[in-house]
Length: 421
View (cartoon, rainbow, N blue to C red):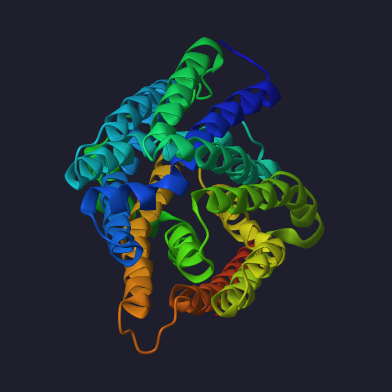
């Protein structure tokens, strides 16, 4: 099947939207289900929540470069469809988990199926001209945002029927998504742009070693992205626990708040990004996004009323400009037959940071909210996030300056003048 790039982009974004909606459905009820299975309180549940995310992330770290390499060899479509079907099976498995260890097994399966991010990112790169890649990568975030508008609200509503009901709803959406993709999702990678699958480049260690092959300072920029991913886990991994602990929110209130998060992500990455990058460039857009993380994370940590979290989500939304700006910048330096490998690297980075981030943030939260904690400070993960974003910004400044010097040197040589040492 061959379709216009615009239609192909629409197809894959709808696929991702349904996928993210399914994930968003289960977020508000995970703490409640963990509490039920371990017979503990919210602080104890946060520890298990961190290790569950660790299990998911470690599996994703292993399999993301493999799926990225397979998508370079066999195309994006079969990898995406296999992952979507596996995710639906996993949600059913989680819905009937009789103990906490089944949740761990389910999260491992989710990590394997969730590694489809590498194929989806490569799909976007295949159908996007270089000048549009950052904006189109931002549309992945917009799909995530819309999924988090709809998903958590649905999850909060169905949580009234127990913490397992939302998992069945998510499973149904995943199977619908698989059928939709099977019927209408076209292949994006031409036969002429495919490459041989190589284990030495597809294993996670080999994938990270390949970072050294990236031109200029791009490997440093991916390190900056890694720090941002870890920083983001102050929200991703502890938002539910933080708001329940500090403001006594229930699953339904958490669902509504995550819906607001989704609205802001969708607006920023689906609309604002397409205006900001052409106007200010990828570098300044990156700085703007990182600055928002640094400042607003501190304000999250010291917020004293629940309504403040909603207000702060508006300036925090600017943070979602940074990652697609960097991702587009790096993608423009990679040939077409290695886009899957690059997205596999991104998947490995997401995986390894999702190993570190949730465990770091949930342990910080648990330590500072445990019985007798001194000081008692639920906002500790957000302060850590601010510090990590600060160091990420420093790395970006250094890398962008190095790349500017490198490009200036190349231009000088091409003009027939000796480059300065």
